[in-house]
Image (tube, rainbow, N blue to C red; front, side, top):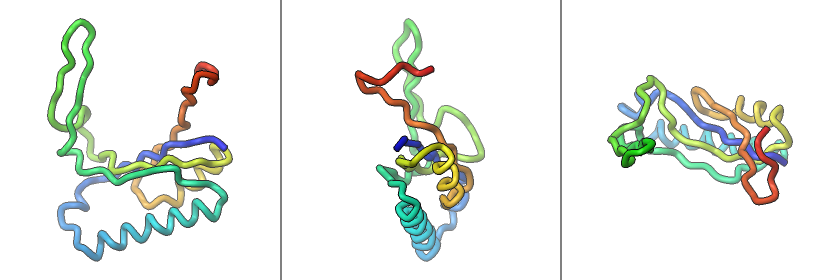
Length: 123
């Protein structure tokens, strides 16, 4: 089984007027997604929701200079990273099918790179 990172991107505007009921409904949808992943024979290895991008800090490493720390995200976009899942799936095809079930506006699916001592270098 391979591992895939699902990066969940969406507009943060929905936070602005979010009611308790709407939050609970969103969490219910993520619970249903988790059940669908298990039913497909895959596994969620981890994942979290993230606070708004306005709470972010960015550390930019610069060659020959001290790292620069700034408030906020590095890139201005209309959509922000709102959470992630790490999924163990049979292959990319299964990971993409599962991503279609994920309740988020946009899901970037990326293979997790093996970094153990015996892993082959990336091609």
